[in-house]
Structure formats: structure tokens, C-alpha cells
Image (cartoon, rainbow, N blue to C red; front, side, top):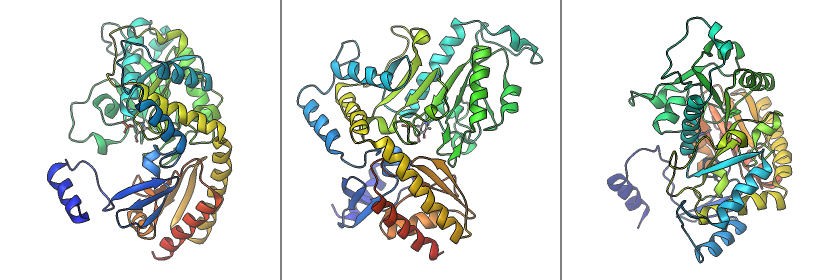
Length: 411
Ligand SMILES: Cc1ncc(COP(=O)(O)O)c(C=O)c1O
């Protein structure tokens, strides 16, 4: 098929739910991608956070090849080794917990929301909450309300969408499930005000990715943990984008010195294969018993083997150290550009999850960079987002920043 024919086929046969860039990719290796015309690109936003090891990492390829010839799928009413191995490895890297496997970030968050609802029917509301004005309506005495944050993003399924603090994603899909209160990010007084006797959980990203690379303040997070302990609420940390090494620790919550009750994961976990996961603190994890939640494809041998290869590569190749070092280097380079170009307002983020907020919309810069062979992203209209692979090198960062500067100069 010729390029124009591919575009036309998409138009005719594929639902138009994505804003698309007119590039057709055929091959990837590490941080490099090649389009159908053999043009090479440096990928600083591999797979929207999926490609933490870059494209086609040899260890992931090897794991998939080996597993595909043994056993691709086995349903969750049986046992298999890759799932057992992966759950054990995730828990070893995190905190005493149990894992539920699914296929995506939205599904992991749906699982967390469902878990919270079940937790709310199994535990008593905290008596101290009654002092917050009038007692609000509860469903059969259960606690079910989740406090979420403005500019958050938790996925496109209905409950995850209701949890998402951005109206633009919700428009046209009413009625959304009830039970979510959205308050200002990094404002503890807003959280306290939103608490009621039906609150069961607080859910947040520690760096809001789709919301514009907004980093949660340390004091804010510590206070959320304290409130959750005091009121017996679940602290749900959505690490779908920040997880698996992106910020220089395997999980972003580890920078804050807290232990969450629930962590959700997806994106980078499978090295390109669809794996989602929810981790729940061990002492409460068995609240969801047989038949209460499920996912047919969740945690198949194939995807678990790929995810195990990802975790091993992060360890063996010392990618957390590389992420810290290269993150600092990229930050320095972006700061230098900010000093030179007035259209950059602020640089923020952590590790290799960095954003440059502009005084203007960023789409044209993204387009210019792509023309010159650099793929980046713009989120929240004005924030250029850089999330290169964790094994990125100085040389690749230098090349990317040179292209970005050329694009900025042309504005
Ligand atoms: C923080 C966060 N949560 C959830 C999701 C949804 O993940 P998925 O697209 O895999 O459903 C995303 C996707 O961008 C995300 O960034």
C-alpha cells in the first residue's frame, strides 16, 4: 500500500477517535524510528510512555519469542509461572501487596475504583468525619466517594473518566458514575473541605502527565497519607505514566517516603505489550474475592514474560541510575533553552518525565520538530512533554535539543 492509500484506508475503515500525525512508521530500535520513506526519527515520546526501554528492546524480543513458542494464553482459572513470577517481582520492588492483572491503565484504575467501593462496604466510616457539616447521603451506609484532582487523567472508561479532573474529556458522555469529588491539586485545604462520611479514597497522580507535568508537593502528599491513615481512607496512586522507572525510582511514590494503599500501573510495564496492574496492600487485598472482578486477558503468560524482561533490564542495565543522570542532563539543557527563548515559561518534572510550559500553544513546535526528525509531545495545549526511553544517551539528548532549538528559532 502507498502512503496515501494507507491514510484513505484508515479514513474508510477505522473510527476517527485519534488526532493523527501523517507519518507511517515501519521500524523501531532503541530511541530511533523509521518511517515508510526510510526517514529516521529520534523518539523522545516513545509510545506515550509505553516505550521506557525504547523500541524493540532485545531482551523483551527474546522473552516474547521464547514464550510465544511455549504458551501464549491460559485463562485466569488456571495457574502459570510467568504471572506468579511477575507478581512476586513487582511486590519485591514495591511494598507488601497483592496484584490484580489487567490490560491497560484505565482498567487498572477501574479495578482500584471497584476495590474502593468494596472496601467502603466492608469497613465502618470514621466517626470523626461526622463533624464536617451535614451528614451526606450514603448508599446503604457504605462509603464510596473518591476525592480526585483538577487536571488529573485516569483513563477513558466511564468510572476512570468520572475520576478524571478535566471536563474536556467528559463532555458528551453524561451521565457519568457518581461518587467522585474533584478538588484543586496541591491544596490540602480543598481536600479537607471535600471529606465527608462517605469518603472512601483519595486518588492522584504524583506527576500529572496529561494535565501538563504538574508535580505533587511533598508536604501535600505526606498530609494526604496522614489524612488517609486517620480517617481510614485508601490512598490510590495512579502510576500508569510515572511508574516503572520513569522518574528515576521504580515507582514515583518512592520519592515521597510514603506507602500507598493502592498503586495502578500499565504503559511501560509490558515493554510494548498490553499489561496493566493494580497493587493492593496485603492486609486488605483479599476483600475482592473470587468472581468479584476479572479480566479475561489479564496477566497472560506472554505479556507477563515481557514485563519480567522489562524489570530485569531496568535492573541489569542500571536504568534507574541512567534515568536520574540523563534526567538532570535534559533538565539542564531545557533550562538553558528557557534562558535563551522567552517563549518558554517554566521547566518542570522529575527524572525523564519533563515538561516545558510555553507562552503559546505548542502544536506548531511539535510539528516543526517532527519535520526535522524529532518526536515530542505537547500536552495541555502549552506544555511540551519529553519522556525519552530510560536508556537514552547524552549524545541523543544533545541531538534532540539541537533540533528543538532549531524549531524554537523558527518561531
Ligand atoms: C496517569 C494515567 N492514568 C491512566 C491512563 C489511561 O491508560 P490507558 O490509556 O492504558 O487506559 C493514562 C493514559 O495516558 C495515564 O496517563
